[in-house]
Image (cartoon, rainbow, N blue to C red; front, side):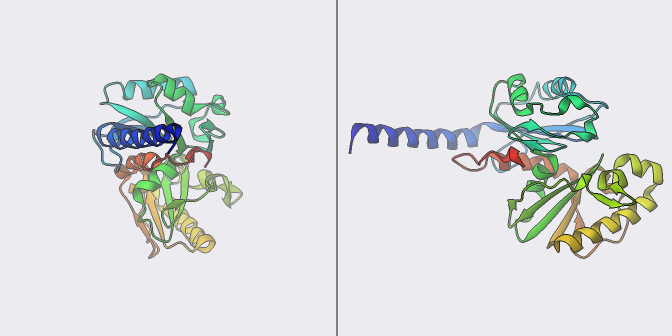
Length: 265
């Protein structure tokens, strides 16, 4: 065996050992950015919370510099971490924001969130995906076709097949009825305007459409407004705890070599 081959194998073993040690001893900072609130916690590699989940209300509008300031302040006293996972309410591709309708600031378009947040928080590697996608990793069973719906400022969705995240679909911006999108029809502003009874009738329609379109094995309802759900749910649909969602941040770093950049979703 050549000297170069021996050196390469030694380096690879050392990298694997370092990764295993860091995974066990150093946390993952998970940040869940929503239209209603911003949450943060440090997780272990299995998604168990090593700290309490901290939460602040999302201001509106919320341009990039303000959000970076808020996350920096929120996480200032967190224990050690060496990776960062972020769920963001919009379309993200390779760490760059494409849409952010629920934060009400055009400054988000083409903003390099992964890069800028990493700089603010110690230059640790950072991965950003859609918030419903990240939350979904914590809620799914990993069997069959599963749809995660987050009911908050808007109508977030994530689709998984046997535990694998499917390409992100912005159903929130697709028309559902009366020429209006899911966000406009079922978002937080509309809930406050029309009241719980009518909102639940609309939710029943949305769930029926999801079942017709996808025939999923199950639909999981989460998000801050899931607590207002009172309509009879289809047999394959259940409400899940919002508090569990942030644990999905660990999934972005769970394998070695690291997972492909999930932020393209």
